[in-house]
Amino acid sequence: MKYSAEYLESLPTISTGHFDNLKIDTGVKRVWLSRMTIEDGMPYNNGIIVERLIDGIWKTIAEYQG
Image 1 (tube, one colour):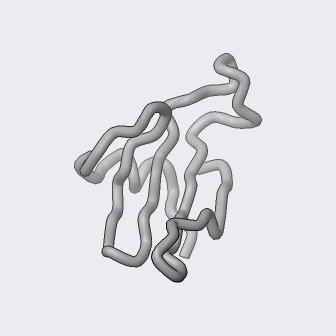
Image 2: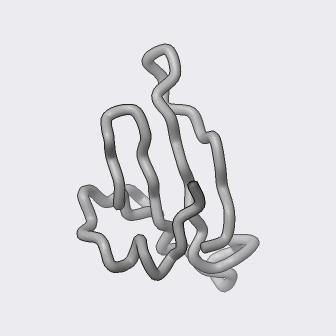
């Protein structure tokens, strides 16, 4: 499932990282919304990163523009 930046922005922030806000954490999946922009050197604004817990390690399974 792809999430939109608008949807993720409407959710409360669970935690903040250096560059991203954690918006969804199910224990096996996490969804982050980036605070970085093109001006910061990112390829696009509203980057979304989806991670899955695999063998005890969080691995990025998707990254896209929101």
